[in-house]
Image 1: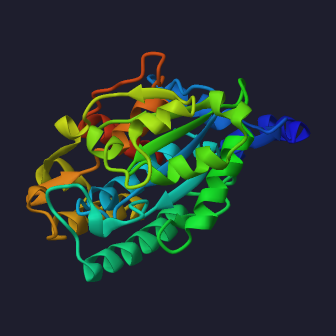
Image 2: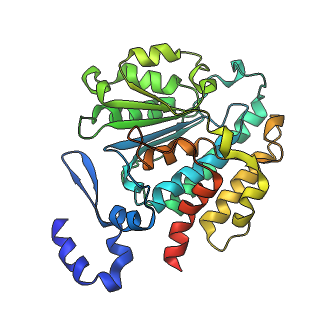
Length: 310
């Protein structure tokens, strides 16, 4: 892979796009080359930590916010040259949604509709914002809990001090708990779990948040991202019918969530709050990452790729 860097440099004027996606795998760690360096000049706050990402969302719980947030998360990774850092993506992690502890409940018909929508958007999001070369697949935890758990176990078991795993907890903690329970105990010290809301932490049906912490993970609480990232639809008017298919898809998914109807508190709001955890991670994580990202800041990153293409 290193030999390819020489012709890429020579032909950089003509092959800048191809060179921007060059990656290599050394001793189990994904290395980013010119993609991260090129974007950093355009997005000054870019400062991701070492390691890989696992994203665990629900979306089959009453709140549909993950439907809008997931494509935003994938796009943030693409547009900052960090796509190869994503090693796990699973949805519908509310493993028993009919005894959900939230005020509002979801019925079986709507829960299955959500699973199907999350399958669809995950597949399309990977296609639009990929390639995610270190992602085996995406997993529906309700349909394939065993597969989703094992994929996360494998990601945990390849962790080290130089290649930690950062788990974005965008839903109930139970799948994370099962994976930590099955993983090699010596690897868990290199696992970080990122949360932005106690409604996720305290909603497990099989693991409490304290049990998750007792495994020995490093906890990061970045504060409620709904404060800035759940807001007026007008904040996203720029994305509606955008010429870039990925941007248009993001608007479409947030509009779908707004019209979902299971909970009343998303009406007249677009919500990508879980994406705030990815923004925090790409801007430094626990080394000064931005805990207060806004729709304007998210927009600036989402448009990087569009600007580059034009």
